[in-house]
Length: 343
Image (tube, rainbow, N blue to C red; front, side, top):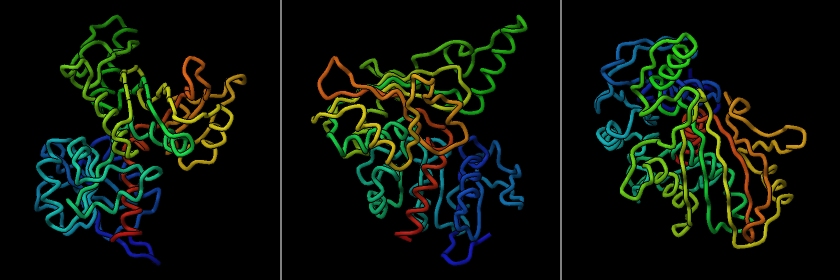
């Protein structure tokens, strides 16, 4: 399993049986991460199942503080409650935890990292032994915003998201599938995962509402963007919508800058920026959709245009695979920098 020519690491994947956990395993293999030994852990509900990695079968263990078996790097996608219970315990045992939940993202002693944007923040992992993976919708937006910010200095961002049901897990995918089938077969529509029918419908409701009228998902985008970009006073307003798409998140972004920036130069900047695929020829029907991004690791950007209603403003559309760049790939990219530069 270990590759020659560089140090290999003992790795644990917590939440290995979930959608993101399985994607993490796929991305680790695809990117040939140097693993000397691998531990797969999950909740009691799915522990005991068997998963394969590079031709070898593994039995999934129960995620407990004593189950790491000496792992040095932990990729964790088991939910915020589990992370609050186990992440510090894993860190106390000498592991560095890369956590995909919301549990640690706004902790001042935990770096919140998108490798294309703020890789140097990884150095702060020593404070708690934890690195936080941002929210999926935040990741793709800041990948697109960061190079434009370097050029013209961000002042304000307004974003509306169009988020796939896979962002809520396998149960959400199954619910939409069953609703579509029921509609075509004149069957009974069951709604359990979502508050309203998701099939052929859009729900402006992701996570719970707070007293301000924003949802927790919208607050995450607003707060995480400020932290990642090191812009504590940045104005950010988000509206997050669940749409009847199986995989891939799309976003309509309006960005206002301190300095002038024009669509042509923005396209040039984006075309040369890491992690971005520019698809911007709308006159030829070339613009990104969720299907374009599926199974890839890039943030796709298109429909870049100047907003004539406000000075120094641009509008654009961006799309990414929320299970890959929005979760698994971003975490593995963090692990690669951690392994290469710090461990």
